[in-house]
Length: 316
Image (cartoon, rainbow, N blue to C red; front, side):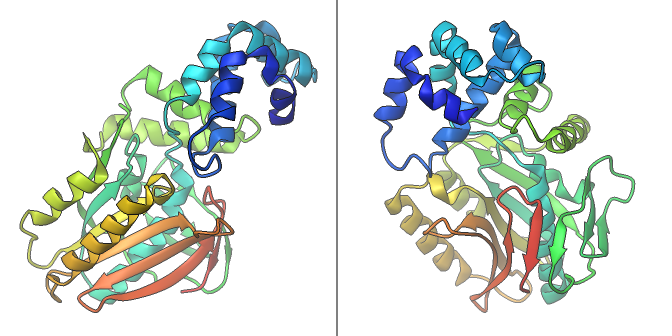
């Protein structure tokens, strides 16, 4: 589908110009995913019949469908691409939960979770999901959301996931109670992955019953305010982010790292601070799950993961 879209970009001059003049690194900005999501959303809307029929697998005329889409709905696709990606991939919670289990073993403390780039906040509800992580079960055994990533390596520690408070920030947070949100998130799922769609729909249902706490704002302005608030005795404060750093400018990334190092200097054994990151390496050759803990300042690579959390190669 993406190849057909590229062949027929000339049919959508506004979309073509947007892609050609994209500022910065197109891979980091997930331009291909943005294009796919716009086309997927268009197909779900039913506005271009031949495109919708392609997504229903009623024919295989990719070139005809993408030519129609770009010719009839150029503005729709370009407008969709102009907004940031909003995947909020729930399967990544498997890796994030495993890191929290390591932290629980190391500190023996429940956590206060601060998530950057929360999107719809589905991963703020990660304690409400059920996990099978290399044979170790965790989370809510009755949850409608079950995460069972393909697992390689040793098992994570069998520790409970105890989250006392969870809140997040996003430049454009999505409302899990909104039908528009549901359509937006589903559009960012590749259409040939029905299991991902079913998992996302189940997580959205959880979020309707347990609405995540998300503020609108810039993460680098929001985080210092949260860290400035008094930290409760016996609680580990955790800064968590997944697939967020690629959207930072270099200066912002340096500012973020420096701030965390400075904040970590104030940590104690009874008020520890931790960082859990699920991010591409700078070379974008693998996705790494890393855990940094203060007051020790130790940083560990826990796992190499599939970008959407489908498999986890545990190193921890």
